[in-house]
Image (cartoon, rainbow, N blue to C red; front, side, top):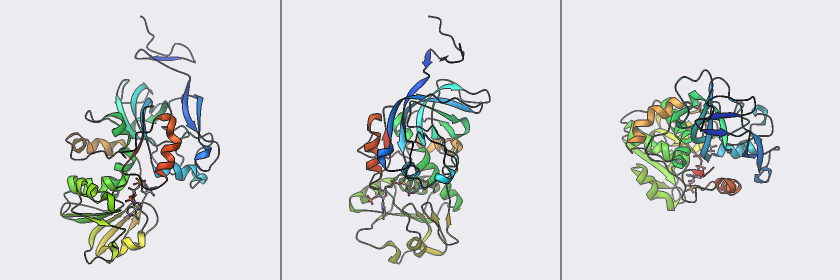
Length: 331
Ligand code: NDP
């Protein structure tokens, strides 16, 4: 049958044989607050794309702590207007491309963190929706060996782990202590330090039940924070990557010329706090390590949560006990 390949009317678009609807299902909130502000709306307009953006049919998404901090109003001074569709991490299929998009094309399987500056004017229409509009530069081609749910869990966490290690000047032969090794960011900080940078020694912290997991990710030794105070150990590290928010204790565990990477709160120099600048190029750079299995996704065993159960997924993430990523699939 003859399917129009380009816009056929101002209100309807057809692409690669699949019709893009005008309205979609999306999770929205119109007030800051707890999970009760979340509502599944079936009549949200499918976002328009700008010249530098593609429209993605979302297949899987993942939650990050920033999603609930944002929903609680932590960043209200710089947030987008209501109604807000939350969601940073996405994996899906390109169904439409803007006129200035250079490489991506319809049908490409992509993933990424859709907010370049996560706390400053994050997108009003995020990834917890059937469609989302994203700048090409924030996306990368999904590694073929990853399914959509696993890909969705990577971008924000692995990009943060990577940018922090780069900023710290981490390199082969250095030692590192990762606080929060079983979380989204920490699990990637361990893997990257060990398998990409060639750390001389990787230590990491978690509660008792997750110590073996830390070792399987590449930790040479795992510290049970319910039994030991890492800051009192005689061994000091070139880098302490603090993904928990223990900046003062972290500063006690670095060598004299070492550096604390802080992502939760401020830390005194030479430690530094930073906020991720999302970039699809990070994912492309790491693609060889994802494709050869050196770096593995870590999806929480309670996930994926189906799209209808996003509230349960948030409640679970907000316990602070998730192991790796909380995935939303299918969407
Ligand atoms: P997660 O929700 O994935 O972290 C959950 C994990 O944290 C659990 O496995 C838990 O393990 C572990 N954990 C909790 N408390 C401790 C503790 N005292 N010691 C060791 N481990 C602990 O979070 P993310 O990794 O996604 O994010 C971590 C933090 O970093 C968040 O505050 C987030 O907002 C922030 N962040 C900041 C970014 C930035 O750009 N600045 C970017 C990304 C995240 P257990 O059950 O064993 O306690």
